[in-house]
Amino acid sequence: MPIICVTNLSPDSVRAATAAAALAVRLREPLVLYGVLEQEGPDAEVAHSQASLHGRLEVEAERLRVLGTQVRTVLTSDVEEALAGDEECRKARWVMLAADGWQASGWHRSPLPERLVRHACSPVLVVRRDGALADWARGRRRLQVLVGVNPSDEADSSVAFLHTLREVGPCDVIAAYVSSPAEERERLGIHTPVHVELLDPVVRGIQALDPQVEHVLLREVRERVGELPGEGKVEIHLEPGYGRRADHLVHVARERAVDLVVVGTHQRAGLQRWWHGSVSEGVLRQAEQSVVCVPPTGQPARKLGPPRSVLVPVDFSEASLRAIHQALTMVGAGGRIHLLYVHPRRLGDPDFADHYGVLPVPPAERERVLRQLQALVPQDPAGVRWSVEGVTARDVALGVCQAAEREGVDLVCVGATESHLGRVGGVARELMARCRRPILVVPAPAEAREPSGWGPEGLHGP
Image (cartoon, helix red, strand yellow):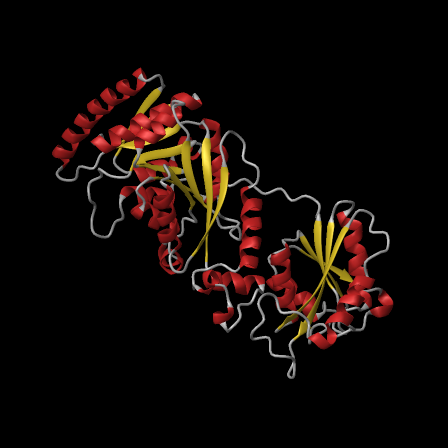
């Protein structure tokens, strides 16, 4: 798996090539030096420039060989096409090039680093602080790395690249998640009281994260980062903010004085990139540090094991009782089952405008609901941890989805009957369409096919 260095032999590119050579020596991989011909004009001038660049490229290759690495040279006028079509490039460990020193193209074209990030099949390392990278590769220092993490984005491959970095040398990692407080409260079903003057002054600010939200986000980011091999510390950093994520990541990188920023890229094109924006391109343009942009192909497939935590929505019907028994057979000793009752908000329910946190079941029903949920917990738990919760939501499926995110469960096990048309009950259908967690639908027994607890109107009260 070679390391590819793209160069135009400018001073910035020469320094980037030195860092690339140091990394190649450390990893014991060959270095492929792609010389980019940027000259435009009459054919005779281009041919002369090509011959000159070829000679200078061989001189640069010889300089890098002295550093202890194997070097091969390739001369190209269209590096994007070369990197996209060459099988060797697709198998490269990473592509490196300087952030600056490239000739300006036409007004309609982006800088070369950004174009490579959109099309490259391998991680692209855009070099700014080449001294830090070279010293780290030579074992003279630790590398301070900031990685942008999005726990809900399965296409985000930035975390996977940290394993590659730890192979080179010790890295202290800051895993940063930029989150909108309002959006996270909505996703998790954690509500903010209207009367903010009653809150602690720290929590009043629009940028503040609710303590309950912060607890869940820390857990989600830790799970996404997982256990990293190699030497170095791992720190979780939650950055509340609105607007462009790239601006907030650049701010954290500057404040924490990191050496390298790692971000994933979806490689969107055309209208998709205009509509969704590009975090990687925003970081590339603004960061003062070197930046690695990791394409989706750099992410290994996630291995799913048997569920260790299961959420069971309960309406006290026969279908939900069967779902509880099914969940118990799946988690085994050491697992966790969370029983959830969702009270759909109705006219005449108490006003929860001042409530801080997840909305509970109305006071008139709360004790009865919790007592009935607790009665469903087996007397002999068989090593399984049980928890119960009663909440209020504007619709049942939403309440279940939010609870699944808060609890971080591996599976939602829902009991459902079939309608006379042979379709799964309403809430179960909604969950399959809206929930981000895996859903297991447990059918009711044949003698109970008529809709009972589950139905188009959601869960009925106990």
